[in-house]
Length: 105
Image (cartoon, rainbow, N blue to C red; front, side, top):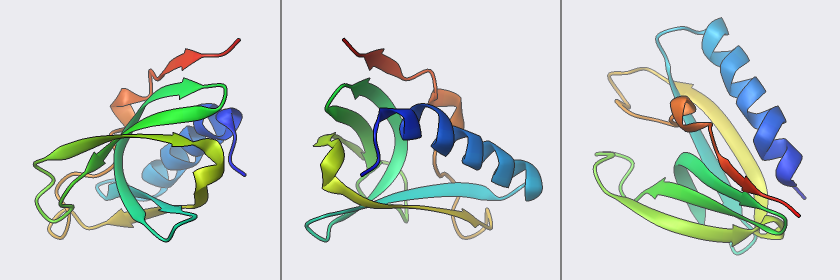
């Protein structure tokens, strides 16, 4: 199970390293949920002890509309990071939003 430290440290670090390795590419982060749903994540905006809050693209082909999703950590079965050519994907995971609000306690 991916816990709070993964989202606070490991995921942002990996995204940063991959983006440095392939500058000019668009980072895309997808969460595959235990129920089979795949979420195309714009950014993580909230981390609590037992759940996280996400902004997710409703239609990744346009990246215009977003939904808000709150998930228990155990709902996330897989996290995928891929880098896309900007001509195929104009907006991806927003690494600038990594000032995620954390509520732990």
